[in-house]
Length: 239
Image (cartoon, rainbow, N blue to C red; front, side):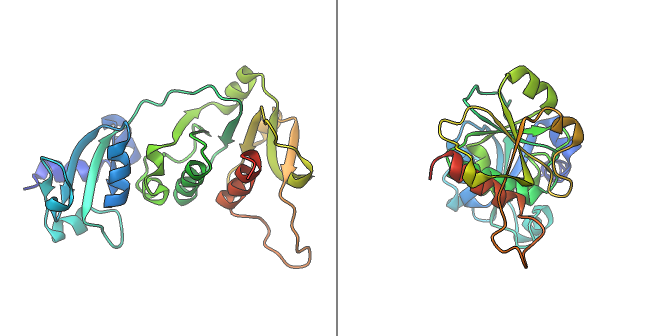
């Protein structure tokens, strides 16, 4: 039976400040929970309206009414798990994918899922980007957060220390089709959904690459950020 303290904890970690303080986060749905259980994330507690579906000891049974109150979803799944946040350690790689001020949780979750699909196991976000342990990010990543390292750091300092050539994504610049990503060794920066790359980071970028519009007469003003990331990753990985 779930206790009042456990209920309070679940409610508390829906807020970034409390997640950061307690170093915990919530995962909902069996598929996503299973992905985290198979990873190096450490389980804190798990709750279910049907504990037999979760093949673990110490699953805490909750009622449907409690699930509806605790879930962050409009249509709650049967299971809620709490995991310890993992200390993120930067991995040295040939190239780095950077995100400046990404603020849409759904976009970040989809980007994480896309990176997992393309075999990219690390992204780097500006400190003022949305928290990767935000409930909406976790849900939209569909468990892929357990496979992708998300680092938060000062992007300008990172670029300067890396000594790598830095490329920015932008409209009306060199076409992606004219750029060779073979053995890509550099930094690729994506800007925020609404404002693009910030001016101070633009000063560190040497070249810009764009995804050209095919329909010049009638087309959206821009692509969704997660779609742009998918197109660039398909080029980088050589698909």
